[in-house]
Length: 95
Image (tube, rainbow, N blue to C red; front, side, top):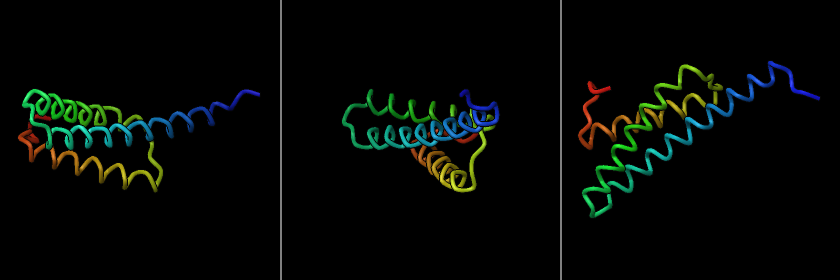
């Protein structure tokens, strides 16, 4: 039996939110790697990757619905990522 349209939309929303949370975790990992590498090229690339992930999350966030449990975690990871990006030299006015 095929799932209902409502179920498909709910599944899509849930998967989208999981993707955004995972993307934020990866972005934090990029900054962790950038903080410990000896290579300036690796540092720059990982910082840029983290910034790109941040921008992608902001882009897709309005398209998904978070549950009451998910939203605070997502908001916290997003806020911390922005703070870390600012700390490594990205100005918040750039986004």
